[in-house]
Length: 275
Length: 278
Image (cartoon, rainbow over the protein chains, first blue to last red):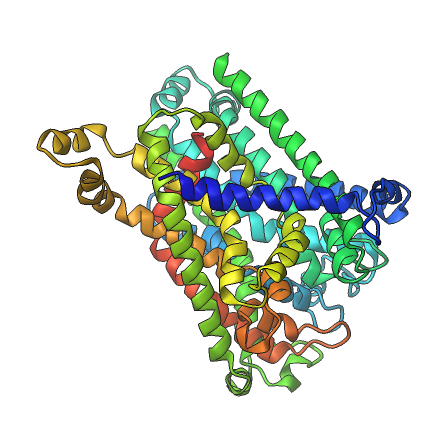
């Protein structure tokens, strides 16, 4: 009964991996070479994309985790309207298609007709219209904000479920001992949520590294490679520059990094369980 | 007395904050819907017009004249295929993981978890070449085949957690009564976990529904393409046709939105038990 899984899925994945590895060691004429890997590490766009990926991941993950935690904590405080708030805050961004989220934000960021600039000027947060997607730095900030919107719902759901498993007695006991709200949060909620936090962190980091459509739609990696992450660069190498073998080499490097991150996290989790 | 007033204050503050967050989070989508009903003059008006003065359906007519329903149908086909194939492949390993111990169980389970972490882009070119070689490039089945390595692992993780939540004693009672294993599965486990199975299936469906990268790369003929590709055509490097793009976006988002809201209980419990308790 497990055979279909082993044959089809593992077979397919194994074959893809293998062919990616083989491709990465071939030159244009099909001869063995290390050139693809060498050319990556000589490529200045590669280093830029690595740096961008770090900024993109740190910004997005920090925002998503914080917002997710805040929403989960707030949702636990209320009695009525849970389903309503959950639907609007957590489900709506989740259900929005990647491409829809991309174009929607791109339109809101429009420097002339975008609603974001209009609102910011009206409430006095900005004196003039900001050209959001025109400079590398602002474009990076813009895609990170959009990604926080799109992705915080997942960490929100994880935390919501995690908080529900914390025994209420802990809070009651702490309250009797005179702990204030912050003390209860810091000494009960945070340590109790540790395992959930670790898993959530791992998933969000890996998903954010791999997440492609939002940047592709909003900026296409520009301006001037300002939002080019490793993933969008692989896409550009394959489908714009048609350098399949170099793209395969970069893919394998990316895969190794993702794998290492997952390995480190799972080892840490195993240790926590054992301890 | 003081404690209960304090509680009340916390609750009110929570409502206020949640309402504020809800407005901010919902705003982009509301803006999208509003824009889809504006004429081009209003879309490109300066200063910005918030509510359309004359609600127009021109963009909705435009997309229907561009055969939106065909892309919609293609998306339904690919989504349904992905759903059934990943359930078909995933349901038995999930059951086995939840009930038996067998040689290679641990590495298999680890493989499931690792597959969830593969960057989709890494397999794009190999998949393209593979499908081309076996003659499935530019077919719905080929795209479905390309999706299942990404949907089946999560299917297994979800389903396993649903199966684990069913007490073993249920099946054991059936086995004692003379049921075979297969019969016990279909008579007892399957009905009990059906809502969960449905939710997982819908999850796979919606994965295919919203996926852009593979669908735009692996389907070349226009008549086969899915909604995300349809939408991406309106996005230009220099000029984007916002009206039809947003009208199509509204239609594309409605099905997942409705389904997610209706089934949120199962999604959240499945997602969480899969990821959190692992």
